[in-house]
Length: 219
Image 1 (tube, rainbow, N blue to C red):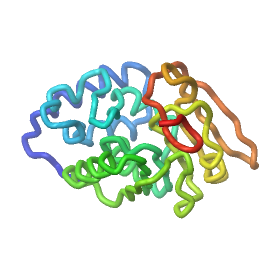
Image 2 (spheres, rainbow, N blue to C red):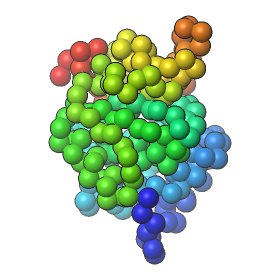
Image 3 (tube, rainbow, N blue to C red):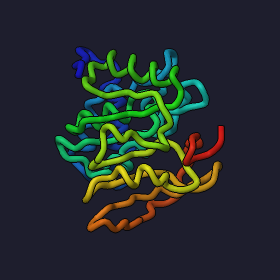
Image 4 (tube, rainbow, N blue to C red):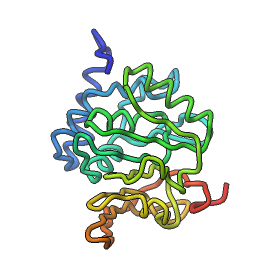
């Protein structure tokens, strides 16, 4: 990762972690440290750098967004990533979530259906010095069988139900975090696979862009 000498946003990033994330109950020290390290302003469109550390999502073009910092931290904490874990991200977005996961030591496969968005993610990750994210263009609702099984799967867009192929590609003991529900409002859920059985826990209401694909919404 690039270490930015004289980073003009270092204080804003620290305030984001303390006031928006830790203050709301995120306590995984590794997640907090990753959020401190990754320069979020490199993952927003030009002209939005000054808003990168504010408490709301931002548009990145093509009808997509970079999620609110707290939501990124919450979903990452729920994923319980350990170094060496293989993680599938459905929806590359700006590349920021993948950068956080790599900083935690994961091997990340990020699948994105919009080629232009995949390109943006790759460029942002390269600019930030984040190595080894496998960005794939394709239907994320089908997962990415070539990289399976995954210890973690994170879905960054909302589906009416958790896509079956993603559950199938989850490793024993793995976790899947996704927003599930209608187009306008959803609940954030975590699925865990143990002994071939799936348990599901809800973590409250959220709002995400729709997940478009064979096992999601129609475009």
